Image (tube, rainbow, N blue to C red):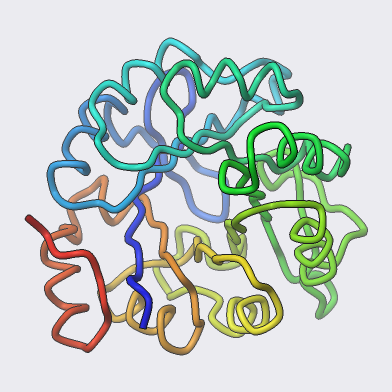
Length: 253
């Protein structure tokens, strides 16, 4: 089994880390630079930084904050929010990001995926998909989960991979913040059909949820926020648990 990754996520609003339920009801979860440093020290495999209101507020991701976070990390660092051009990506990579995550801008302009993959390599391009069930179908949403599209999740996932996405970050909006577990049925579908790594997001509440998404959901990585921010689960404890359950993870040093 390939090594499975544990990825804390910093959802950023007004320069602070926040967390809500089903994408609303945000509450303060701490300072991003301090959290980033802590997670790197605890054995996180990667870190994701999402400026969650950048697209809605029509502004760019906070470059200065990205630079400060990157300075504390020795693990891969993915940044998303408000990215709509090669110039935006160049600026983020110069500030210390290793990968970028695009979502609304990819839906609006799918050719952007091709452009970024050609310019920076597929390994740099993560396409985030916010998915919610609507009338029994998995539907892609944009603008921080506020705006439903006509795209079905699986067909959109196929398209972004064909265009050069190197990874998919799938967030189940139905599960997000509920702590009821990941959407393993949808994750398993994507994992079975697509040749790129799938990151599970939305729903982590207990350590067993991570085991379930790596086994039942066939996810390559699992992303979580509140359970780490509010110290409900520690990354070292989670990794020890997964190892005991037969899941291959990078050891905590």
